[in-house]
Length: 335
Image 1 (cartoon, helix red, strand yellow):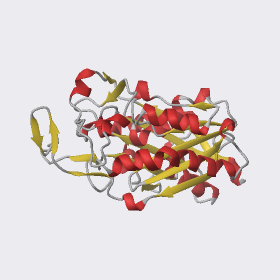
Image 2 (cartoon, rainbow, N blue to C red; image 1 turned 90 degrees about the vertical axis):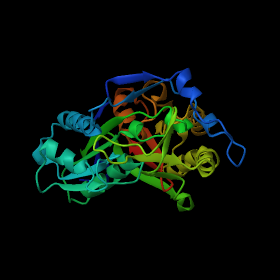
Image 3 (cartoon, one colour; image 1 turned 135 degrees about the vertical axis):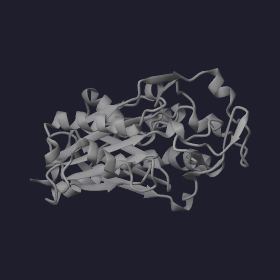
């Protein structure tokens, strides 16, 4: 098998049934105070209309299993044929083990299947694909399964602008010998000086008329995501704003390609970011679902890839993620 023959064989995704329309009440509770640099965080986050959230008693792991089964069915792959399981459930019930082990159990995967939780929000899926392809190319695995899911709607301070559009979702892909969506290359940039810029930890949260530590169904404090008011805006507006187009150009230049040669999937937290990236990169198509599905954090990439699979017309697809740490990662697929 040549290196060119390994990629995404089949995909699946799952969304909660509960759909919320983002309205005036959501915007009313946002903190519009300018940060120390005089910039208003919420002004970055525009364009969302609807989002999907888990109802009480529902779990993101159920979505992950559903997405994984779709991908396995599409690939004609039985549980016994999964040699590696990559991905991440966020935020998982336990700090360790990650719920990826629960996915292994519920899918009935073999004991010999290597389970590899990848904690690099929000590029977990992309990094999982890269690792899975490398394992298959090396002959260490015949097929691998990559599954990511997010329940971040439960882990947010809704006075913050970035919280308004966050959705829960899960996506999955089977990796193996393939004629389509073959991994060609990967590029990344790491900005570790922003290590503390985006973090998830147990911390006080505010809501209408209330402030304190949120308590989960198990009676224990729940973690809450936070983006630093100043540094978060710097990373999004001053680094990722043009950093995404620069990273994509670097990746395309290696292969003699331009934006017009690709269909594009990106992080989708804001309409202003999406519009700028589309204009700067100039793809044949920018495939996104911000208005319909919101910001699905780590699941945005597999969900959009699966949702738009039949719409892909370009010979190549670029998927670009950003996330905590902070970092940006892009993969080039031959479609």
